[in-house]
Length: 212
Image (tube, rainbow, N blue to C red; front, side, top):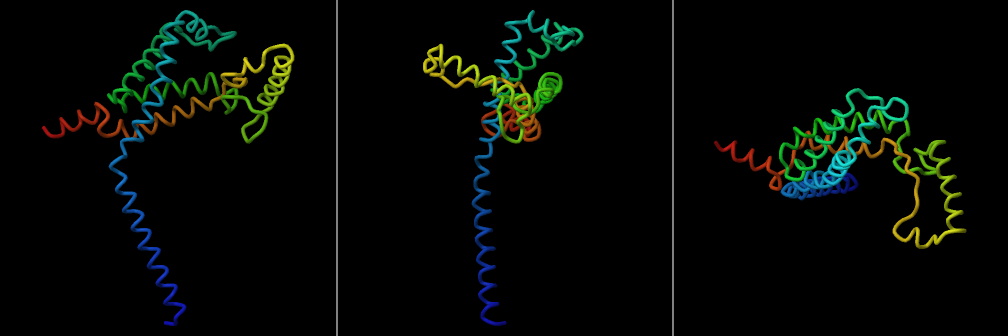
């Protein structure tokens, strides 16, 4: 074995040692693995609560949209469906907040997100907010942004544009499948990993009954 081979072997051994050290360090972070499912749950709580409570607050109008075949979804039994969807979303928010029955409630919530994505959002493409360029831009979003620029021009000319945009810029809602797909994936993760350790009722119930 020549000197060059020895140097190569020494470098390889150092890289192996460094990799093992890094992996041991990552393993120590597992003590905080409850943070990921906790944050997923807390992110979804206001989303689900607002969606469900808004349906209850505007029950008749939402049911009319569910059932109308011309300007709505044309679904059967619209009042029953609105009640069930709103109830699932509100209960989902409560269950995720407390970490109770997380895997169980994730299933109907995923169904809600999948149906909403297919029936309501998919026809509009991927983007939730219209953009005029990028991988997911379409003729629809490009046209929406062109109209937005015209609207901005009118507001800048005839309105107090600085005041109008003080709390945020104007955008066009494209209502694509982006958000529904994102929430579905988050719920799918929670279905497989559960509520997480420590900060969930599921964890303490499992700990209690596994000891008996």
